[in-house]
Length: 367
Image (cartoon, rainbow, N blue to C red; front, side):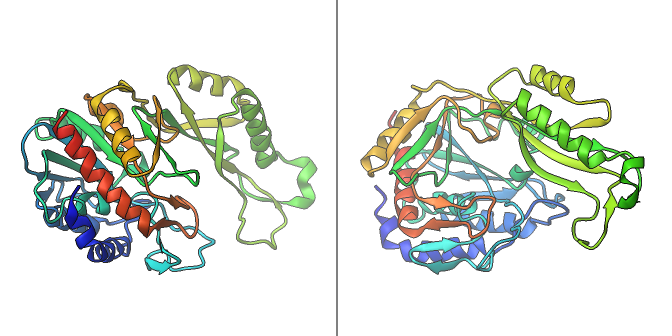
């Protein structure tokens, strides 16, 4: 146990709130260089050294080291977030505290976890050497991380890997996973014409209807095909009565393996008038469920009153396929609203989370 966590916890909470206040939306043309600099400051506060390894990039990857004896543990984290979206009743980057919770984009996924997991080592020597890989494009599917990993393989070499998150459910249990599903991000497109007055609906094609039928057929064939958005015509102009000349929809599709075969099934379902565009494919990953990182994280979580649910694969995606060493992902602490409005994390859960992070690393040091 790191007694400094409790001693300095109020200051840690304020530092986490400051980090959450920095908008770090990676979508569109987001410039996250100030967020990357803040990550470096957090690593330095934890007694480590850090550098922005891609100073010319707008969403640069950060590499850090918290020195200590062997073994070496790779710690992964993401500092980017989704756009706030609609429905918020609070400032999404205000980090307001209400009812024992912090409300902000990134509170649940996953800036609060990144900051808390680093500050768990502030004020005390790290029980082992930690290599830190912090990226700003996870919400974009980590498009450059594979090439970055290949270029920095020696710096990132480790014996084990850990990815901590605030993942505790209302029943007091939390996942401890050794892998993740793969993910296809797809876009369906129908029509390439102009909008036509809807008085002529019987005389012109209806791409929106064609697309809707294709989605229904796809869901019947592959129930896991999730529709993330649909667009047709000009939705913001409610007064227009038109037959839209084009329509688009996005699908995300998670898979255990056989991703290529799954894409062929998608293509076979779609009619000729609907185009499939593969926006990205992210590989699945797996590691032994009885590995030292899994055992360490599970036993420490139990010690702090969280019931671990060990699983071979998580329903979410992460770049775990890159690590090449046994790893574990999970963590205690209540949080909710990821990718939705009024995202939050519990302050009490953050305290337990920080202790679990520290003690899991310490347990691996003695493995």
